[in-house]
Length: 115
Image (cartoon, rainbow, N blue to C red):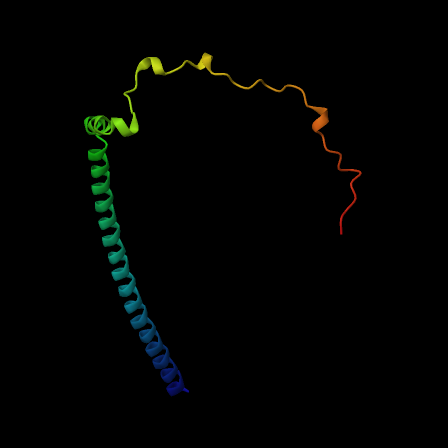
């Protein structure tokens, strides 16, 4: 009986060692994948910051003004002036509809069901 208990204990210990060995390699694999993803995220952040800097450089007001002047014949772009903007009270909003229009009500009670 004692040898069976020792044999079962040894089998359990060996099984746990195999499980721990596999889990160790799975953990190391996940750690390396996480490190790769972190590197990719860092590279994407760098590319994004470069693109933002390029966008800011290309959208400088003096550069856009020069481009508008160079292409004036084709685009007819003029600089904005304060008198080109309107006031809120000059905007024609649609009138508010306070009552329901009874002519637009659809009677669905007398419709027949189609097969």
